Image (cartoon, rainbow, N blue to C red; front, side):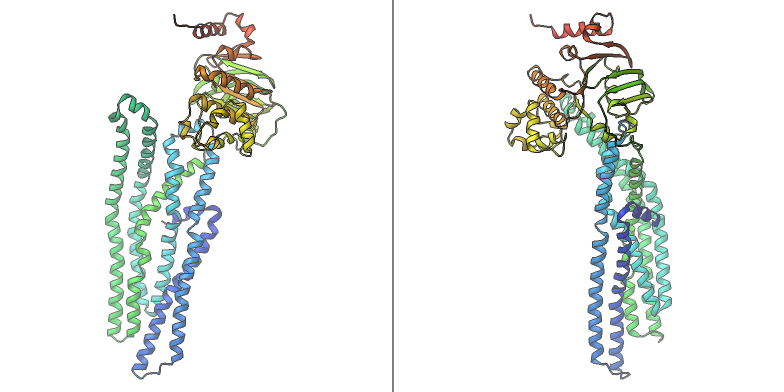
Length: 582
């Protein structure tokens, strides 16, 4: 138990000092808890001595006892307050810092990390798991460490008056610790299973909600909900199992403490009967016996909760130890926006995608990348942005190997517009401001005008302050795309990557999107993945990719005269774009 507590204290990091200061306040709080009882014992003895004529009770003594009682009670509440304000907020502060740390790590890992770790587990880590830590971290430290501090102080006070009673109380604490240890061992076995059940629940819930459109469309409620029901059922079973294994050891833990409390009462009564202990001391012993173990009794839940915390810390540690892609990177300011691939090879989990790819993209030029689905077009763009690292060869931007740069310094030079646009559940203005957090409202409006989205934004209920549905669900595809282009315009990066930006746009929006893209790409180094002839034919160079290799390279005029993949591609596109209804 204490091993996990130590790990938990280490997890609090920079707030560790406050935890230790809190232990001092807990110790002083325990002393001031015991003092009133001892003062009452002294006062009762003085009253009895006066009553029996042994000694006269001085009124000044009564006033001193009263003042001392008031001071001790005030001291008890003071140190309880100081401990609370010192320790109790640490869990919230450490959890907030952990969320930021995890967010920074997840931002800097390779995208391969997300394919190896499903979103359910990651979502559970940064939401459910950290909320659990937030609620219970410092509470468990207080329950275990401060609980034992309190009981040790009270046992010492008890032993001062009656060593036998102190020894009996110590035996009770040791027996309690034994049963708690057995409880902890069972919890240790169940904690990973409990953690997995929690992750499965989150994962199944997310999957079910994301697939709700398909579920409704195909009326497959029973099939779709089977996974989520199983996850909930498994969670129920493991929690019931934990409770069943918890109860016997919990009962033994509580029984040992209650039995020792009765033993202390019996010993003090016997000693008083034999004349070895005064009546006031016996009464004090009786009061101590029924309050001394209250702080230890609460540890029954702590044993199980600490094991869950231990499993949670292990899970968070695995994310923290993820291979950050730019751990050796430097903040480098690029001198130009040239891009070069030199014998680049890349594979996704042993599946080769690019093989010895080499090409150059001069600053200020437009390069179109075409090829069959799965040929490696998007992978080329991902390697430029360093979403992944190459297996062999070199990707250079501005004559600098991207592996020498931090992700932030590299991506500050790159704007990306994807086919699938994601907008945050926030205002339109903040979604555009994502491209440049320091932008003013006027700059945002100017970017929106260039992206041809100002007019429809003004027609929204609250204009730029209208809150967009999650993922941009309240906007059309063309509207979302133009907002994403406004975001890229506001960023004003020297390199622009367009990944199928117009592939899924309806004809009514296409001319607006093309106008917005023209505003975005003025004077930039542009890489565009597209299938539309109008987007490709005016490019300064075209890279034709097939099976992970550059099979053709040149301008539209040059490539159309060659028998090859590009010409076949153009013929197919012309047929597709030239269809009509008879």
